[in-house]
Length: 87
Image (tube, rainbow, N blue to C red):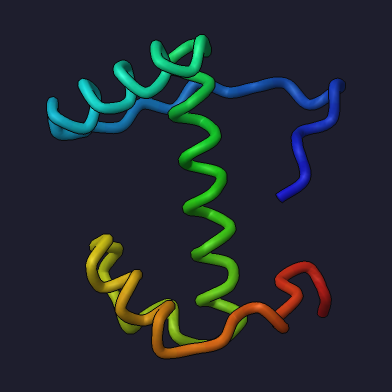
């Protein structure tokens, strides 16, 4: 996914997460010398890339976002040849 242009302003967006997810994000961020918010933003963008791929393949509705369901669907399809940015 392309990064926001410099003239695009970031917008604060609040979500509720399980405390264990927050702990894991903080630990990963600390281990990689990066701010937790930057890691969380990157993880969200990666998840959005996956969602675009599923949407382009017409299977986004097949899962409710659970990690196990996502990995199961990914393993059933070869997504390497799909360009999510091509119309």
